[in-house]
Length: 637
Ligand code: ADP
Image (cartoon, rainbow, N blue to C red; front, top):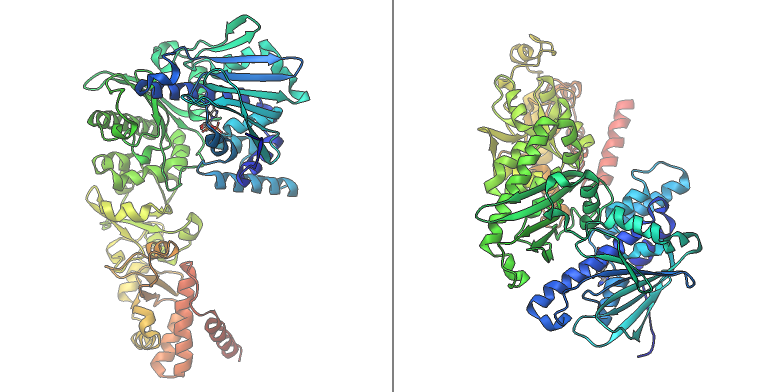
C-alpha cells in the first residue's frame, strides 16, 4: 500500500489552529488526554473479548506504556487496547464527530475577534477549550509531529498515521506485533520537559492516578508503574480526597472545570450498584444538540460496557458525567439489549431519585450556590417536567424562575405563597429573552397591581406549561391571553390606592370609545380577531393578546421559525382607554370628524406598533412607512 495523503475536515484544522495557539498554562493535560484514550481502548477490548475471546488471545493484562527517546526527542504512549483500522483512522483522527463543535468554533472565533479589537470576551479561550475537550488533538500543543501506529484487534495489518497538524495527514501500511496503539510525539523544542521521567511521573500522578489500568514508565528493561491503577469508585468515600474526585472527573468527563456536585454512593438492594456522578460547573457545548446524548459510563463489575446508554439516565439529566457500576447486570448481552433491561430501569429510578434529592437539598439550603447550576442546566432539567410524569413534582420543586418582582430566581411555592388577594392564577409571559419580555406592554397592569409574573424565556417552557397546567391548584395563565381578570386583584400597596381602581369604576369612559372600537374593527377586518378595551395596559396605548383558546404568541413564533407552521392566528388588539392618544382618536370617531382614511391609517399604525412591541416583523413595511409619513404630515400641519 502506498502512502496516502488526506486533508483534515475543515473543523479539525480550525480546532488544531486554536489548540496550537492557546492553552499554554495547561499544556501538560495532553498526557491525561492520551492516557484516557489508551485506557478507553483497553476497556473497549476487554468488553469485546467477552463475546470473542480470540480478539486478545485471552490476554487480560492490559497496560499503558510510556517511553522516551532523548535523542529523537520523542515521547510515546502505547496501549494494548482495541486499536484502529484503516477507515477508522481517517474517521476518528481526521474528523470531529462531536456535537457542539460548531458552537465551540463560533465562540472561539468570536474570542479571536475580540482579542484583535482589544474587547473583553465572555469566556477565555482556555476555559472554552476545556469545556469542549480537545482530546487527541491536544497532542499538537507540545508536538510538531504526531505518529500513530495502530493495529485493530482481530486484524493482521497495522497502519501508521502521521501528521504535523497543519491541515494534512498521511496513512501507510506498517507493522505492529500485537493489537493496540502507539502514539509517538515529536516534541517541540520548548516542550522538552516532557522527556523527563520525574516530570512525566508527576503529571500522571496528578491527572491519571485513578485510571484502572497500570501506566508504566519503561526505560530499557526497567519498568516503573506510575499510577495506583485502582478504580476510584471502588474505594471508600472516606479514603478519597477532593482532588482525587476532581482528577477522576477530568478523566471521565473530559472536563477541565471543577465538579459543581459530586455524588458517590454505593446502593445495596434489589439492584446493587455504585454511582460516582458529577455535575459540571460550566455548561458543556453539546447540551442542546438534537441527539441529547448522555455522558455517564456504564460498567458491569468494573468492565466498561458503554457510554451513553439510553436506558441508564433520562435525557433531561444529560449534564451528568461519571460512572455507574453494577454487579447485578449481565455481562454477556449486547449493548442494545441493555437499554431495555428491566434491571437497568431499576437503577435508573434510583439514580434519578438520588440526583433530584441532592438538587433539592442544594436549592433549599444553598440558594446562592444553586443559582449558577440553574442558570446552566435549568433549561435541560425542565424537559423532564413534561417527559417524566413520575418525577414531575420533584422537578417542579427544584425549578427556579425569573419574575417581574424579584432580582433572584424564585421557586413556585414561594410564588404561590406571595400571590395577591384575589389572584387565582400563576401568571407568566413567554419570550425570547429577559430584556424583551420585561418590556412587554402586557405586563403594565400586573406591575401596577404588584402581581408577580414569571418570565419564561426557554423554548421548553412552551411545552411543559400546557402539559402541567397548574401548580398547587393554581392554574398557569399567560398574560398575553384574553380575559386577564385583573379587576379582581387589588392594586399594589405602593400604587395610588383609592386612585386607579376606584377611578376606573367611577370614571366615565372617554366619549367615542365605542365608536372608535367599531371603526377599528371595520378598518382592520381580518387582520385582527377582535378589538377590545384593555385592563392590563397602563402606559402603552395598545397591545396584542391571544384569545382564550388560541395558540400563545410566542409558541406560534417558535413553530414558524422551525417551519412547522406557516399561518398566523389573528390576535385581539387591546386598547388603553386612558391613554391620551386613544382618547383623542375616540374624539375623532365620535364627532365623525376624522376622515375615514385618517382613522384607517391610525388603526393600522396601532396594530403595527403592537406587533413591533411583540418583536414581530411587519407584514407590509412600505405601507407602514406611507401611513407613518402621512400621519406625521397631518400632525405637523
Ligand atoms: P474522544 O476520546 O473524546 O472520543 P479523541 O479526539 O480523544 O476524542 O479521540 C477520538 C477517537 O479516536 C476516540 O473516540 C477513539 O475512537 C480513537 N482513539 C484515540 N486514541 C485511541 C487509542 N489509543 N486506541 C484506539 N482508539 C483511539
